[in-house]
Image (cartoon, rainbow over the protein chains, first blue to last red):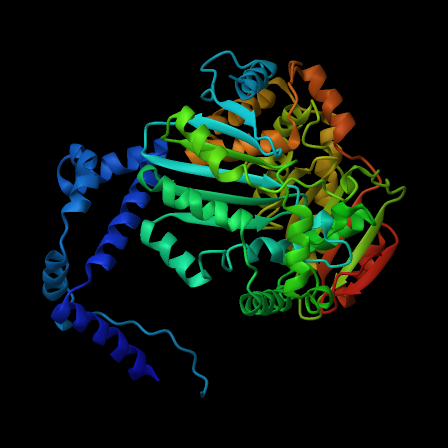
Length: 103
Length: 455
């Protein structure tokens, strides 16, 4: 049971490493990220949070204004590269929460 | 150009004696399509996105004997349309990062949509199909119903999920405001896809409905677009009488509904009474006083029941306002054995409000609190679209009286109940029945059974 779902997840990751993601999948995520960003900057709370985040983590609050363009630049090859580099076995920590009852 | 909301907000602020930083919502245009749909358009250009809010006279008050029907009908709108299967519809919205949601409440049904401005043609067309051309796929309906039945079964494990339904039934009796939005297992089980098709035909009508669009568009273009898309909505007269306008019978004595849950370790309770309707001219003043009494974390109720005595994790009070009436409740929960001190403490705080009233300092603090909370509530296009449909539905009135200490005294005496309180206690009856009897005649029911049609 345990092994099946773990295997399924790893297989999906391996698939991205080998085959990459489709243009449709990539575009969908870009659209969703953009809407998420719009939602954040619609409020004063979201604006201040984003300004702080871009300043602290990305070095310059002004990068916030380029976020939509930056999302757009990402390619399927970028995704493949990042997955290969970071989603490795050595980087992996797996936590399992299960009840102690018999199946 | 209509500026009702601007006037309204100005009145709210001036009525509270708020001189500084008056908040003014953006202007909007209001018009009515020939078939009866009222449309509000508000331009908001900061973010290239658009939000839509639709309100329809299709809430649970029209369920009749088929409790749960309005709720299932709204959910089923997204089960497929003339040109889209459910799967295709979900995929299309998912791909665009857009959303369309539908739900029903006690009085009304509503849809809301959100999209990037560049996708408005696609998403508004989907909204039109969902609203005007749903197919109510039978297989999807059966799945939805099954999920609802499981959820109704699960809710019996959770006092806080069901206490509101018990209370409304107890308070409103036979009035349609006692109707349960999600329905009962016995009424949901026999529902069919034909039932929801019929409910849709009878209640999803343009007359009496409103659509508000807020966001990044040009009003003239959006007016054309909305007119083109929604003018084909069939005009029919709603056959139902105005059910909600029937008088709500006042309860003439204090009484207790005890909902037994055998394995309960704590008692969850409401102490309530009739409240006010949403268009009551004193609505804002009542809200300010309630903020002090039980609305915010540092309220009188939370201070006493949580901070000073440690009887609960949180205690609050609220006015739930509908079109033709409303309720007031104090709600909290406590360990089974502290049921009595917790109820007594809540009553003591209510008596204190009547006896001692409030002082200038706390009134100022509550005004500031309400004022401070106001602008962030109407920031996003979605919130503004929602505000417009709420104004349409409830027909807010202007509030011109200032809230002085004298006026506050009047508000407390008039709107905060003193007696004939209605108690609903969910807990272990074997342990708390004696206590319950202290507060009035007790009717006992079982949480495992469903909410009765009358008590």
